[in-house]
Length: 226
Image 1 (spheres, rainbow, N blue to C red):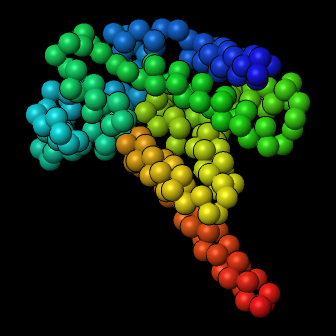
Image 2: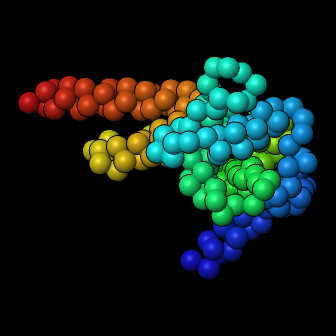
């Protein structure tokens, strides 16, 4: 147990170190919006203050004054509704300006390291190799540039696939746990970014096909044994 905790602490340290090396500590200041001044980061950020001032807390609020006469949505601005909606409720107590993308990026780096380690654990029993694989995933080219796309960082990160890969490995009869896990994953993906939702739904469909084929195989085997 002690070695396992030490390994998890090392994995989290790698995620934190990678974040500080790639992004730096400045974005962790919730009032610092200077780093969101280029690329898609501008659109991602602007979706938050405009939606935060819009009325309607129980649904994704419309964005009317954001450069268009047609109302948009915080979801269309890639402003991460998973965080935008709850922070909207806290709007009266938040400083101005305010951004949550810095801490969101930190969480993404930490989860990338954790789920990379989960994949590595299925490949090797050596802790040092699992840490090396986690480090590789943290600096993989498929991990997007956080300065350009802070709102959609996880859309092609392998951590979502790691989630689903572990679910696919669940025993076929474990339907309640499977249903709960898929419900949580699809909901989080929907509230994070449409790209991530497409990836998750694709793996969900693959898992349903696997379940169907496994059931048919079990029925055929039971028929042959009669």
